[in-house]
Amino acid sequence: MKKLTFIFAMALAASFAMAQNTATTTQNGPSNMAGVTQTGTNNSVVLQTSVATGNEATVLQNGGANGANTSKIVQEGGTGGKQVAFTTQTGSGNQAVQTQLNPYPGYDFAKITQNGEKNMGTQSQISYNNTAELTQTGENNVSVQDQTNSGDPSHNGSYVTQNQGGNDSKTLQGGINQYVKVDQNGMGNKSIVNQQVGGWSNDGNKTYVDQLGSLNEANVLQIGAGNLATLHQTGSNNNLSILQDGNRNTATVNENGYKNSGYVNQKWGGADDNKVTINSTGDYNQHFAVQTYGVFNEIEVTQNGTENVSYSGQIRGNHNDAETTQEGYGNKSTIEQYDGNLNDADVSQSGNLNIGIVYQKGSSNDASISSTGIGHSATITQTGDSNVGSIIQH
Image (cartoon, rainbow, N blue to C red; front, side, top):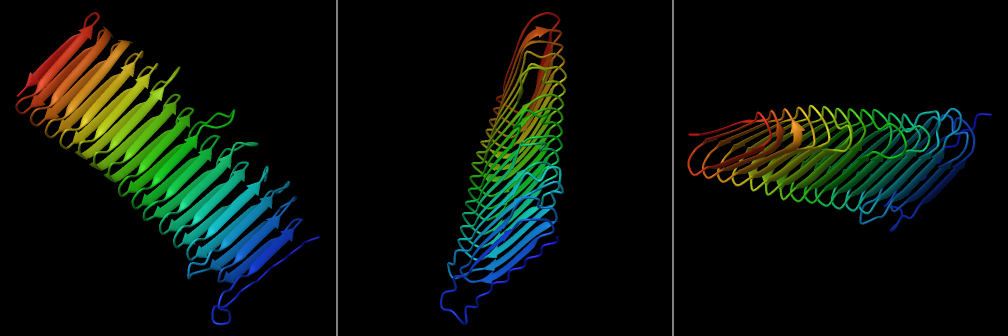
C-alpha cells in the first residue's frame, strides 16, 4: 500500500518573539515522502525505515538572529533502495545530519546547503552508487562526508564547497571509480581525503582539492591502481601531502604563495608507472617527492621564486626519471637515486647562488646539472658502472 506523509511546519517571527518549532516524521514502507518547512529556531527529525523504496525527505529551515536550526534525516533502504535527502538551512549555528543506511542495491542522494556562521554538516552513506553534496558559506564550518565500505561501496561521489575561514572537510571512501572534489575559499581551511578503506580494490579513484587563502592544509591518501590526486593551493604557509600506494597513480601539485610545503610519496611493492608533477610559484617553498620500489616512475618539479627547496628521491627502482627546474635566487635542488638501473636525473637552474645536487647509485645512470647565473654550486656523485654526468654553468 502506498504511503505518503507530508509535514509542513512554519513559525513567523512577526507572530512569535522566539519561534521554536519541532517537526518529527516516522515512515515505514515504500513510496514515502516527507517535507518540512520552518522559519525560526527550528528542529526537524525525519526517519524513514526499512523497505525505503522511493523515499524522499526535504527540509527547509530559515533561522537568523543567532538561531540554531537542527535537521536530522535517517533513511534505511530495502530491495529497491532509492533514497533522496535534501536540507537547506539559512542562518547561524545550524546543524544538519543525514544518514542513509544500507540501500543495497539501490541509489542514494544527500545534499546539504548551509548559509551562515558555525554550520556543521555530516553525511554518511553505506553501499554504492551514492552521491553526497555539501555547500557551506560562512565562517567556522565543519563538513564530514563518510561514504563507508559496507557492502559494495563503489561509484560513490562526494562534493564539498566551503567559503571563508575556519572550514574543515573530511571524506572517507572505499571502492573503485570514486570521485571527490573539494573547493575551499578562505583562510585556515583543512581538507582530508581518504580513499583506501575496506578489503576492496580501491582503483580508479579521483581527488581534486582547491584551496584559496592562508594557512590551508590538504592531505590525500589513496591505495590502489590508476588513482589521481590533484591539489591546488594559493596563499601562504600552506601544507599538503599525497600518499599513493599502487601502480599507474598520478599526483599533481600546484602551489602559488609563500612558505608553502608539499610532500608526495608513491611507494611500496610494485609501484610502477607512477608520475609526480609539482609546479610552484613563490618564495621559501619546500617540496619533497619520493618514489619507492617501482619501474618507469617519473618526477617533475618546477619552482619559480626565491630560496625554494626541492628534493626528489627514487629508491630501489629501475628506468626512473627525475627532473627539476628552478628559476630565481638561492634555490636548492637535490635528486637522489640509488639501488636502481638506467635512471636519469636532470637539474636546470636559472638565477644566482643556486645549489644543485645529484646522488646516484647503480649502473647506466645519467645525470646533468645546468646553471645560469653567478655563485652556483653543483655536485654529482655516481657509484656504479657506465654512468654519465655533466655540469654546465653559464
